[in-house]
Length: 212
Image (cartoon, rainbow, N blue to C red; front, side):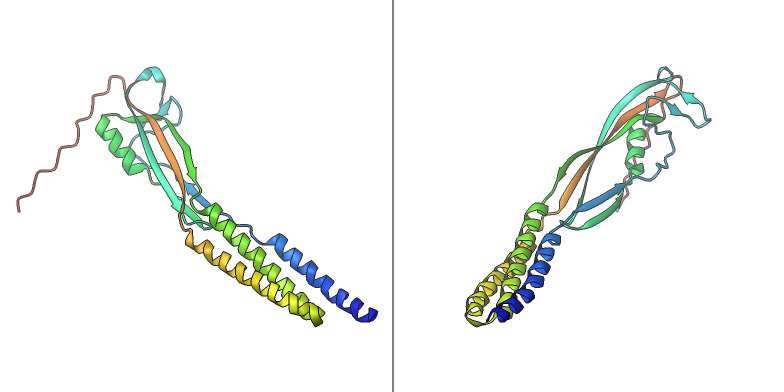
């Protein structure tokens, strides 16, 4: 009798250790979105400081130009929860329109700022997944222990393990009902300037209406 108990204990010990390791390494979920901005290719100088380099390679100081207008661009980038995204921000067309509309010839003090982050359903979905894994693995571990021990103990451990396993499956499936994406809100701001002494460029003519 003592030998049987010792054998069961030796069998259950590795199973418990394996289950504990699985529980410790399960349930880590991340959501990532990498937004990159390649070098700006524009027809006019763009600078992150109060100075800029003109087309001839000369540095134009702050006293060499006049402020025309300021601008702010807001962009929102999103990715599915627990997903990964890589987005390349394309700002050239919008910056071109802003400079042409303002009649400037350069942009200074360009600043790109992360304004707000909304995790969406990341936390709730991760919670349900972790709950599902925890309950499921616990139920499987208890049911496996019942199979190893046998006897009257198995009659108790089997139902308990089965219930926990079922609850874990339901909890994991519930994680797929929370699908709000994670969102990053970026803000691009700057100053449109015009070099002193330069003529204000004529605005682009409006396209003529076409007759049907």
